[in-house]
Image (cartoon, rainbow, N blue to C red; front, side, top):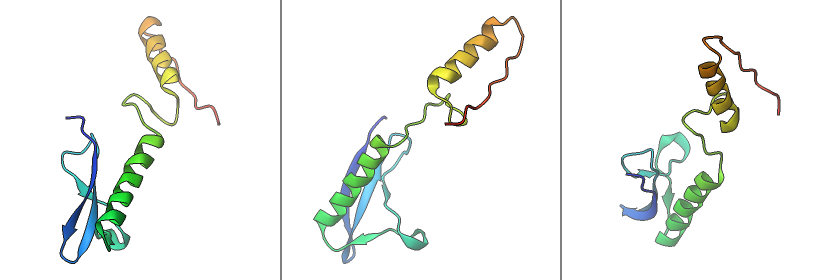
Length: 98
């Protein structure tokens, strides 16, 4: 279920870099210009590109399912708790400029 993978596969005379993230059901090729799979001359170049994309995903901004409008997870959880415990009183949440 929560699988990540990065590998290369030969398609015709070129190599494709394939990545699979936990949110996707199947591996997908890295897309280039024109929404076409990007081709690489050899297996090593394709594998490096796939690994680079997976590392960029892990080092990027991971989003929690409750995170909204750039607020931190702590702020979202706090706002949810305030709505529950405020006896029906709605509390508006404002975005603080970063």
